[in-house]
Amino acid sequence: MASQAKTRASAEVLRQRKRRFRQTRLLELKMIAKALGSTKHPILVHIIPMRRCNLDCGYCNEYDDVSKPVPLQEMKDRLSILAGMGTSIITISGGEPLMHPQLEEIIRETRKHKMIAGMITNGFLLSKERIKSLNEAGLQHLQISIDNVTPDEVSKKSLKTLDSRLEWLSEFAVFQVNINSVLGSGVKNPEDALTIAHRAVELGFTSTVGIIHDHNGQLKALDERQIKIFEEIMTLGKRSFSRFNDFQHNVARAKEHNWRCRSRSRYLYVCEDGLVHWCSQQRGYPGIPLREYTEEMRRQEYLTKKFCAPRCTVSCVQQVGILDNWRDPQNLKPSLRRPKPATPQPQLVQLETTSGPRA
Image 1: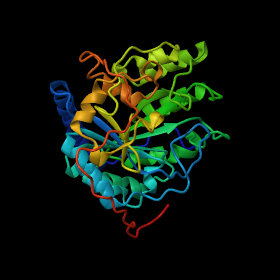
Image 2: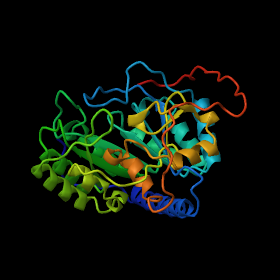
Image 3: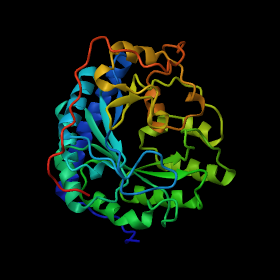
């Protein structure tokens, strides 16, 4: 593993980092004010430009090894639609988004619409040059989930294989970086999560911890040893927005969480095919094309009680729910039927991707 000494960024990087941090915080405050003032727009959208991934982690159900990148123009069109809905935050996910040959253009398009631009990546394709290009594109948040200290047969996302890239991020990134460690079933050495969290804080990043869910995104209880580690990491992560959400404390103890899931309303998951789903773990409910997804549909989902909510472990959906848990009871049952669009929609023409470097 690389040296444990904290990497020092240059004075210019630190200046740019502080500037982007202030700009992002201002946008986040505006996002909260807007969300509290109205329930008619999405707060956070996960969008998938690339289902393909360069890894094959044994627990993951969100990747394949054959998909092509979504054409840039189609991604721009989807971002335009989401901006028109009033969306505040776009999180680019996958698969592995860094495999998309025009990822930086997607980020630029997000910022052009004045939406906060974030990304979730496994980090393996990061380089000093790629970090600088992400800076220039306007990226504001990046998250890497690290599963263990040394790679094993289940996951290669280890501190040993990623530490040099973390040091590059500490030295060159002007966007905010969060490192997420994991606990739960299948994690051989729970202490690894604590080691990862301490390393993240040492490098100047925020740190969070996730609890591994089953293939349906449902909770698995932690044992006493894991709970102690979990609580310590949550203390380390006090700078993170996740500190305001107590759902993981319930998840850790296998308790059902009483909340109102606003997925497909305040939170949208838009897959590579341009379909809107509840979340990454409930793809197919019901999979309506984004172009056909109306305000009326969003309102119906806002008031719909989700059957999977009490035992959900999908953190981003839970965090969005904080802003609405106190209002508007959910009295509708899920409808698994796909409603017909109000007017006929033009057939989508899939364009070939333009030339560019491929991973």
